[in-house]
Length: 313
Image (cartoon, rainbow, N blue to C red; front, side, top):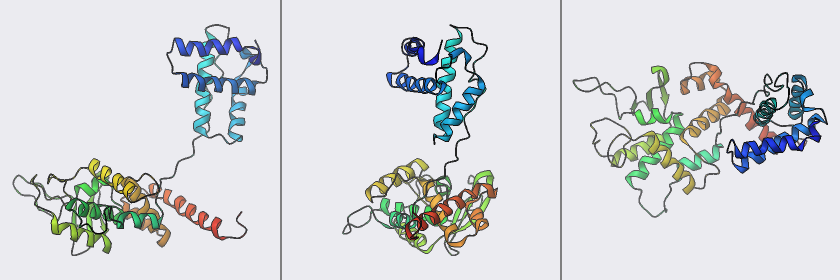
């Protein structure tokens, strides 16, 4: 039965999805568009005559037309389901889609703020200019400045102690701490790998302002950053506070702590070009993990070129 002459088959399959599989109307409609595209690509070929080679050719056409790997993978999944259903009703030697895989998806780059947006985010208080900062606001400013200044993971930020504490009876030694005299943080990251990261002057000033109002921890810890209850702050609280701060200060996108880490890496690399130094500061075991920021750096250069060069367009 020809593909374009078998609306009863496709309609029956879609009815099966709606009534037997109980899929939503939105999902069934999407499957309907996918199978209609298959019929268009098949150009009247009998459903039972469509081969693996045909499906690969169809997928290549979709890719050449600009569709990404994720979209093609979804369509192949729909086609595979259709032929599985069809095999129970008409003789099929094999499901022609079974061994076909979509083109590899392009690896998405981490999202980073521009230099101006990052500086404005961490330097702008989310309050009226005349109002005195609350302890929570001073804590927020210190945390956000430090995240951007030193490229810390949010878990590393939350694990920081005010200073190093030796192991004592009933108390463990500090694994991560601030060294105010040196302007550094000592961080124990993934794989228990310890590293030293510089802290910028703006972050050190924000931390000093926070320490003036920081009370004694109520959980017996030496935590640098405390919640409003006086215990070590949790990563989820930092995420929530940063999101609210970004909205209040007019950030151009949804901001999360890891975006400040990406921004740190991208901006240091743009200025220095020293990939190894960025690797050390981020605590990456392999430089392969750091190389993604070279793509971000080139992306920045390409944007500058497109805006500035008279023959770029």
